[in-house]
Image (cartoon, rainbow, N blue to C red):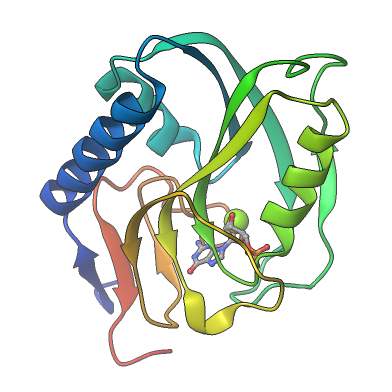
Length: 177
Ligand code: 5GP
Ligand code: MG
C-alpha cells in the first residue's frame, strides 16, 4: 500500500461505532426478529461485524449487489443492480438495510425501492458512514455510525478500484479531497 494513505478512522473507533449501533438496534428490535439485507460489496465486512455484535435474532441475511462508482473516486451517477433479492425474501419481514456509506444517496434509494417492491413489514437503514455534504437524493439514516467530510475513504470493505477492502482501518488520502 502507498504511504500517502493515512488512517482516518481506526479499527478501535470502528469497533466502538459497531458496538453502539448494535446496542441501538437491539434496543429497537427487542423480542422481534430481523431480516438483514447488506449492500455488496462495500458492506460485507461491516455487516459481518454488526450481526455478530447484535443480540437481536436474525431470521436471514440477504445480499444485494449494486454498483455505482466504477474505477474512479466519484460516483458515476448510474446505479446498476448486479444481484437482486430473491423473490419474496423480505415480504412481511422487518428489514434492516445495511450500507457501508451513504454518499449521493442514489444506491440507497435504489436498494429501498427494491425492498419496498416486496412489501416488507418495515425497513430501517443502518450505515457505517455518511457523507452528508455529497447528498443528491435525500436519505434517512436510522442508525448511523460516523459522519465524515467529503473525502474518499478506503478500507474495512471500502475499495479503490477493488483494492484495499481487506484493511482493518479506514484510510483517506493525505491532503486529498
Ligand atoms: P451513493 O450511491 O450514495 O453515491 O454511493 C454509494 C456507494 O458508493 C457506496 O456504497 C460505496 O460503495 C461507494 N462510495 C461512496 N463513497 C465512497 C468512498 O469514500 N470510498 C469508497 N471506497 N467508496 C465510496
Ligand atoms: Mg465501491
